Amino acid sequence: MTPLTDPTTENGGPGQSGTARRMFGLLLPFKGRLVVVGLLAVVTIGLSLLGPVLLGRATDLVVAGLVSRTLPGGISDEQAVAQLRERGEDTLANVISTVDFVPGQGVDFSALGRLLLIVVGVYLIGALSMFFQGRIDTRIVQDAAFTLRERIDAKLTRLPVSYFDRNPRGEVLSRVSNDVDNLQRTMQLSIGQMLTSVISVFGVLAIMLVISAELAVLVLVCVPLALLLAAWLSKRAMPKFGEQWRSTGALSAHVEEMYSGHSLVTAFGRQEQAAREFAGHNENTYRSSFGAQAISGLIEPGIRFITDLNYVLVAVAGALRVATGTVSIGEVQAFIQYAGMFSRPIIDVAAFSGQVQSGIASARRVFELLDEPEEPPSPATPEVVPPVWGHVEFSHVSFRYTPEKPLIEDLCLTVTPGQLVAIVGPTGAGKTTLGNLLLRFHELDSGRILVDGRDIARLHREELRSAIGLVPQDTWLFEGTIAENIAYGRPDATWDEVRDAARAMCVDRFVRSLPDGYDTVLDEEHGGLSAGERQLIALARAFLAQPAVLLLDEATSSIDTRTEVLVQRAMASLRAGRTSFVIAHRLSTIRDADLIVVMDEGEVVERGTHEELLAAQGFYASLCTK
Image 1 (cartoon, rainbow, N blue to C red):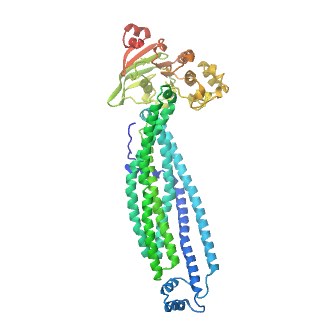
Image 2 (tube, helix red, strand yellow; image 1 turned 45 degrees about the vertical axis):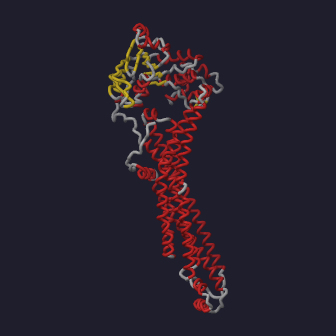
Image 3 (cartoon, rainbow, N blue to C red; image 1 turned 180 degrees about the horizontal axis):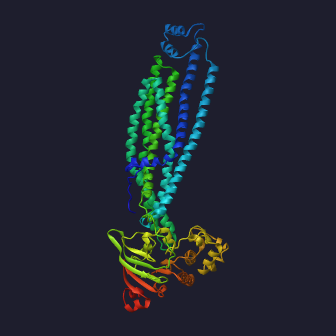
């Protein structure tokens, strides 16, 4: 597959930072709800910050009560502290001097109970706030992902056929499903963790500075170390995550291909080769995934080690300050809790950075798809397509898939209404491409294609294609009933019209033998229908659409013998009265064509009837003898 690059867009610059801005820009349409989430996050964090203060106060009540119970009553707290110092208990005097107490009173259990009830209430309200915050941010991310999938679906319908020609289907599916899911997980964590973490860090830091600026400085020492470690590891993990998702796309493409061609793989005994190819893709996915996770997995343990060492410093320094009477035991207890609350968001953000790198890698792949060049737009004022009679002219048409390899050069061909034109030639001669150009699946490099004298480049694509019936080489039936498949080209068709089309194309002959008739649901295996029966359904679909021009792309190359007579009869009925192009390698099926066009290397080398070309003893005659 042609490698894609991360383009510069108006929503973000190139590279990782631009992709990240564009990814989080997906949330901007939900600004109102984001504000509500922010307010709830402030409430949640604010209430959680009250907890350590209140618990520290409860600890001071208990410590004060236990110490005061050993002191005589009837004296002031200053006198009690002086007595302790006279007895040589300076450390205990320093500890008790930092709290409010009444000598001889003991623990005030009523005040302690009231304080604990307040703590429970604070935590309960905080939990409710967190619940509603989670509900809203989940809804935001789900809506953003829903909108993104709609954009991707709309984009896929606007991409030219050439995009799907050069990109494996499994790779495209991986971008649409795996990468979008991974991007969604990243945005979910972004709102839930990033926002809460930022608010929490600043709120905790403010309280720690109030309790003890000296201890707060010790806690802040770990921040630059943790951030440097996270940035260093994240930078090295990013390429690994990109490789991981590319490998996942290649693996998905291989699995999809092998599943679609399972019967062919089995018939030719290529299971071992398919297994080896799968093992190779699986090994690449394993190695890239392991490499990405191994590097990003170092972030959390490394930062946790730094913060754990910081706890030791805070505990030792806090104990020393309690001993000198600078702070109370409850304040140190609260400070240690705040230190944990301060380091936890840093650990979470650092651990989350691995998911961010993975999400950015997926976002880049999704945005590459969204930024792919689309089909050129139809003219601002397209010509109205009148009833088409079927006069088709290729006037000096040239086309190439790649600049260095021309496929069709200066092709001229005129087809009159109602003519049956067979296009033959070896593989790669440009036969199928000719039909794709008529349908405007590709744009011409030069020349014009005229339908009833009108340049198709001046017509609206949808109106042009509605006038052309396509029966592709590979019969495509979707999961639905037989009737729904026939009516695919005309959703407004009545039941009688569907049945008439089925009868005209010999579909009714075998459908009547099915238990559910036209209501038979076709699954991925097409409900046990033969290749010929599927082809007949495709012909009925084209017949119901009543096109003026018919394009049968190698339509007889995959027909089973049992129904070939029916298919030939149906095709003859379908071609009657309309301009028809038949692209086929089975020359026996096109002997009655009004005009046979022989192509080789993008050029028309011969044209005429079957008898005329045989008599010429040229390229066509050589094809017939092969």
